Image 1 (cartoon, protein in one colour):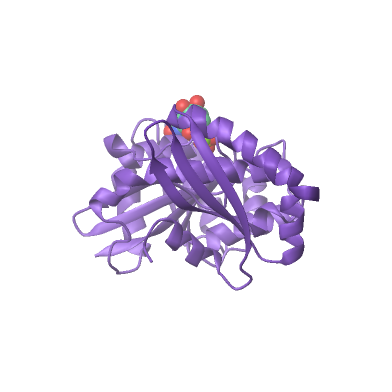
Image 2: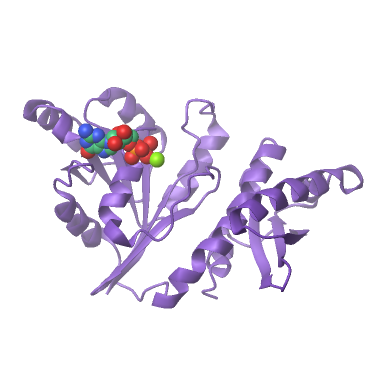
Length: 289
Ligand code: GDP
Ligand code: MG
């Protein structure tokens, strides 16, 4: 059994979403269009005979509106390092050197495949040239050329993905997957607000855990913990007299109500957990522990 996490990384419009769709086929479990801001965004879980691949992508911090400063790059790096394999997606018609600069700046330790996409929209020579360019890079284990849109070479890419994943038991049972989205999105919405409301390192040092999610007759009751690493961060999240968290809670509740399409009672707590590693929080969040 092969089981592991695959993180998809690439510039906007490289074809990440299209590739996910191609890989997931009909089984696309989770698609987020709203949320761009968390360290781990599970986009889909593909379970089959002898494998489970959990696809995620990185926060939308290489969108042009964001500056690529060091802290943000660190967040991308962290989420890539937590993965078993990184897929670095490049548009064959995009500037290879620029993409190389971006990939190099990640200083990846996890194995990475460079995936050259949109080969349907370029001549063969161009694709070959790009492949040769990336094949020589230190972060690149292997280059695979594909067309996510036309489905070219997708089965081969999937084969190579499995090759790099560790042996192990699946992380999710079949029926857990269907339970994932709503809770997942609720946590995402709260995280999105944290990104909107606070600056600097706060968003990257906080994690959201949904502690209660219960459907009452007239509303959905949700209790969530915002976990931070230091007391000072807790103070910032709360704001003077709890002003900030109240605002955050109101904004988050509105979005959650729109998402679940019913009234929501949202309780937020801020907790300091200096030693909890993100991956542990992450696992707990999805109920493995
Ligand atoms: P993302 O921003 O990385 O998620 O990129 P998207 O998956 O949204 O794709 C951006 C655009 O490129 C869309 O218009 C896609 O239809 C197009 N696209 C993606 N993959 C391919 C491909 O293999 N060939 C061609 N010709 N277009 C593609
Ligand atoms: Mg996309």
